[in-house]
Length: 171
Image (cartoon, rainbow, N blue to C red; front, side, top):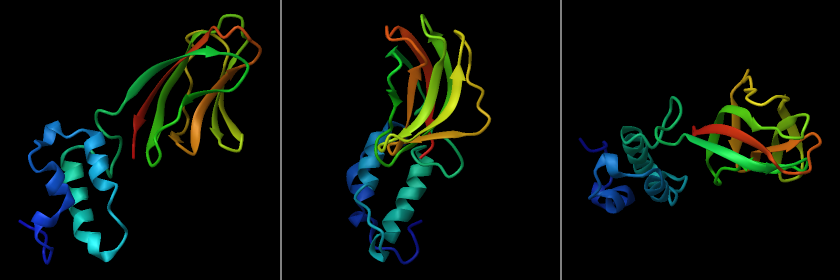
């Protein structure tokens, strides 16, 4: 059933770009490219409704939690007592930190995980002081392009410390 009082669906950018795609073959990048040119005005309201409907059906948008197929697990190496970017999402996306733990500490006494911004402001999330010491997440920790995840050690300059993290896209 078409949207009530909507323009002809044949004019839809969503349908024009993804018409021959099956739901399970649409990637998050494909969907993001279709929704990026939508503007905030009445002329695009029908397109916004289509994007929301098909985005949720295809698992590329969520109004209730993480997006399927977007969780990453990574190993950050070369950590010293200088701040090192762990993960900085693309502009317009939001990831939630799910887990973090030290893989190797080597000569450092501790590892410090932070949220950092472009002005050099930092908020400490936690300090680890033993290998395989998992971060205890008491609140959801969200990471964006503007406020990303960074790490440093307390006193190691050799760069042999390693951190394991897992994040999932929520927006």
